[in-house]
Image (cartoon, rainbow, N blue to C red; front, top):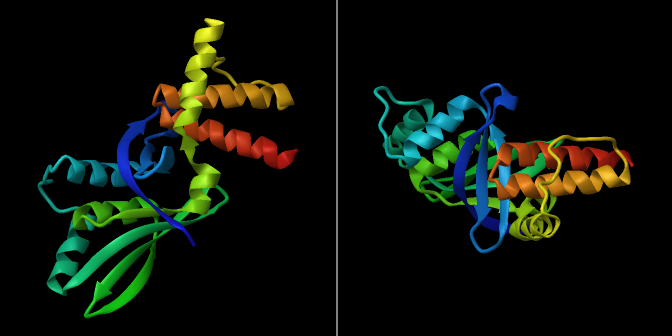
Length: 197
């Protein structure tokens, strides 16, 4: 399975998701971005570490790091390797006394651990092809918007071929605006429509 290294672009929130956040990963040697919806607790754990803010009491991920350091367990990498029914799955690859182990984890927890260990994050090529958003889509949307002089529509209409085109334009516009929560929602709606046709 081909692995692509990604890094964290940022976190964004949206009133549509009741406290959930979109964690945006970007392809290190490419032009794609991957939005993953995560919970508020995990988003806070990732954001605090990225900002080098030490909480008054350790988070669960900090506790894991302390225990791992105590027992000479090292996190080598995190690999987001599966996507089923719009749910991502990850593995934390650990090494202890020369032996390597894979531990199943939610991507949000795996990434919160990775940032504490300075471990690289990887995504499978298959997942990036399926769920990633290309930067070229942003550029095409900008050109289309400039040519038409109008913004793309903001609401989803029927499930016809023309609505698929509208959804794609809305997706491109959301990426351009860096509203990755909306982009993830639109991507899922496009996948659902394509799957039902």
